[in-house]
Image (cartoon, rainbow, N blue to C red; front, side, top):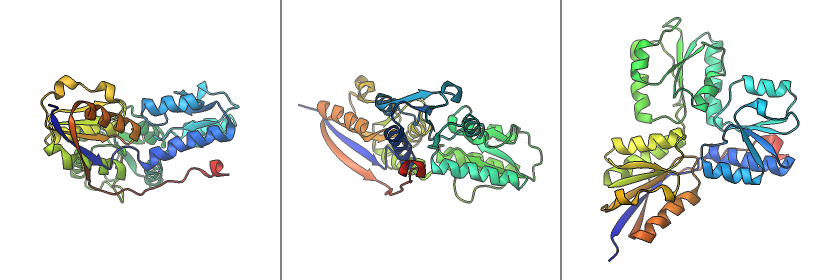
Length: 313
């Protein structure tokens, strides 16, 4: 007798518009200029996607100096410091910026505040490419990084009355609220973004997890270990009533022994995980359980971002 299992499938999940656009940019660049096309940093944080693009002719490098002058280079969806396109221009390289438009919006915000004479505080994770890219929009020392509420207490600013803050787009919505409250308390004059910097896709995926987590004996997030938004989904699940929440890159990573006696499981995916990997996980459950799948949709997404004009010509 096969064990019965209810699988709650979160929606929205998986690819967001920025990831979709970034992958398209690499594919269209290979079509337009032929292989190889160089990509600075993983285009999006997902091994399956990166391997697939590598097979099509993309060469992934960490720094611009690893690229030849005579081949196109693409900057990843996470954004890059200003120095990178400046150096590419100096070397007369063909380059395409695949930075997510919602990350670019944060860059523009930081620039605008700096022009108004405000010192910036960024809420983000140290070393994450998006944080590095945003902080690199302004000269050294102009953007101060805080990761926690405790950091807010110790951050040293030039002038507490001339401050603004921005955030990484893939943070936990709830954790960030606490950090923002701490900033407002310590620096009452600090200027925040007009509209939340945390992107719609991150917010929507976290809300969907909150909706299913209390009903799940276990919850799996399909995503990469270096994907910030995927790791946040695991934390959100744990905080919202599902003790066993794990990140898996694909079905082969599932620890079936730990899932022996469950009656319900939740499945979602980070913004850079393709649907094919989610299907693979569902199939793996179907092979082992008498499965009933229930879709839990908390928002509808119809955002689409255009690829840069150079690829549309």
